[in-house]
Image 1 (cartoon, one colour):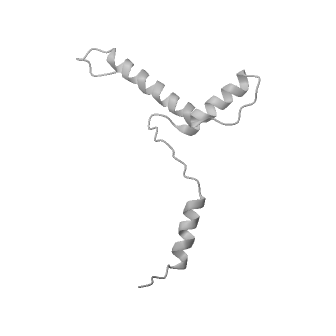
Image 2 (spheres, rainbow, N blue to C red):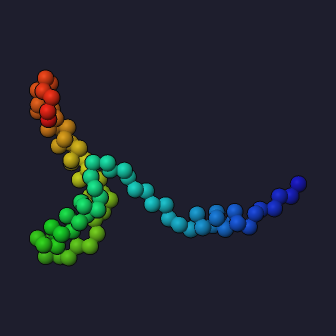
Length: 84
């Protein structure tokens, strides 16, 4: 039995294959655009080289540093307290 492929399905498959897969990690504790804006502004103001991009690795590092700080901050308080 011969099956005929639908032309639009072939086009959709080719389009999906030609586009690179971009994996963006979820970083719920930080606002990516605000972190990028802050880092680029600070770097361009305080460093001699002009910067234009912030890597995903830098954003992940910022997220993990904030997460670690929050955990350590919460651990400092007594267990009977109600306000952090």
